[in-house]
Length: 257
Image (tube, rainbow, N blue to C red; front, side, top):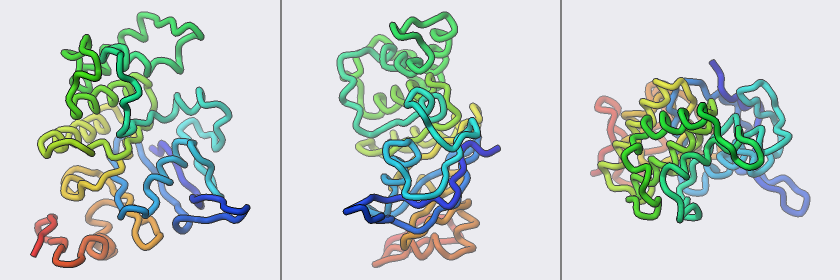
């Protein structure tokens, strides 16, 4: 089942009334129940694509069809029921407990004074359990480690009850164990909750082992598919192999000479 569909999408910026695309036309589908990794070199256009999908900036051309079947978002509150976004920099929420932060995920569904019903509280509880932060619910968020804070933000996204979750480099600043743990959790959540999860990352080793699909931006084009499909196209090797670094196809790992 398709959660979001990109049809002839052109992304980039406008300068002096002239369109400045960052890559070619994109046709791709983000499906429910899959963890999809968005990878590419710095400056390739990953952040631009993320911002466009999240409606933080407009596409230059083409169509984005959202899970509800619409290709336009009239109000932020409407998009907030379709896509939850987890950013790396979330320090602006300091001063709240973990539970209070997770509760913010219910904002699109509450009235103007933020009144939460029993149903909302049950969703908040379940979201904290799914993200593994229920034991931290009374802690101020600024007292958490980077890994715990990221899990808290994922719990908030789960409480938002959207079919799509987009994460922008969630493993930045995390140690290796925390990165592995977070990727495993995202994969499990995608499979068990039937959500489409798109994560922008530079952790190629984790992508090779844990992502269901890859969106690879390379040479101003975006290639999509499983590891095996991108290997058959030759694009994964072309992207990785450089200056003593190469992709070992038989072992599905990156080696350094």
